[in-house]
Image (cartoon, rainbow, N blue to C red; front, side, top):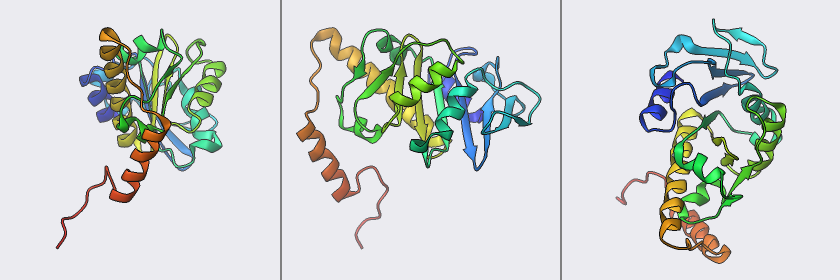
Length: 211
């Protein structure tokens, strides 16, 4: 948890105390502590809670976005999710102020489920925000949060970190393309071709050479 926080901060996705990460194992969820400067996060700044938010271990109160994390873990659509990353990353936050959805602009985006929705604005830490983000994540591994940031999921924390980095990269691609023209989106047919090719070739997975 602490190492993931420092990695995200080094990549520029977390600044100061803004943002938080979590990991789930069974009925226990590890969350970064509220007010922790994540670039220098330490293991003692991680708090363990149950799925109802009851503190099981740790000396510090968990992040103010605990309702968001627990809401995702409790949702039926989040089966298999073991890690969540929430950032106030520059590009994702910028786009969240302008667009209602990040369209599919690169084939790697399909690993996140397709176009990335923007959840409407609600105050941080609120149940309303947790519900809105949950809806935006339906069928997706990432979403933007209007005038706020982004959230990414993964089967474990390492995968969630990778998906957060991918989300920020996609947002930067869109921003750069939009600066010089109208970004060309991948059509549904093109997306289908990519998915079929990925299925047949095992794209994105390490493979041994033919003997």
